[in-house]
Length: 147
Image (cartoon, rainbow, N blue to C red; front, side):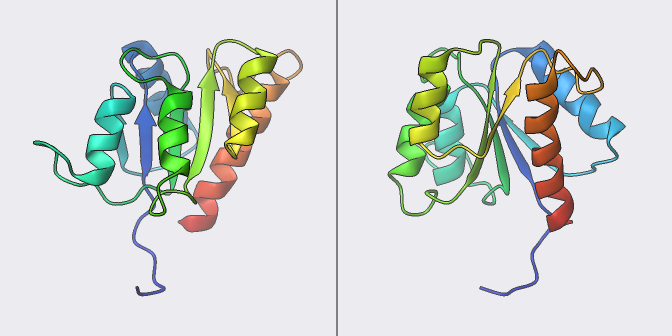
């Protein structure tokens, strides 16, 4: 493995098209021009990461943005699989959630998430949405370090 890192990339696992568009818009606003790979659910994301089925294997993303509430395989289920796979155990994973459920948080912390992004994404509203700003700014810092 060479030390010169290719362009960082993001894997966005999200079933809601509006949320996908929100994320793309915010990345543009932050001048982050990074390839964004989109999977509609946890199962599709796994296929892409592993190159299973008809999916070509994608380059390992630098950051995964993971929606918790999805059909077929939810975010926490996907996270469990990733954390038990030696190839993906170290991925930076940010959980995107509309809820601030303590049980979800605890579960995600046990699975070593890098941060939380509370939806809907409203990064310029401080105060109320402080948690979303923190999670997202941490996320942005990670990407900028890699650029």
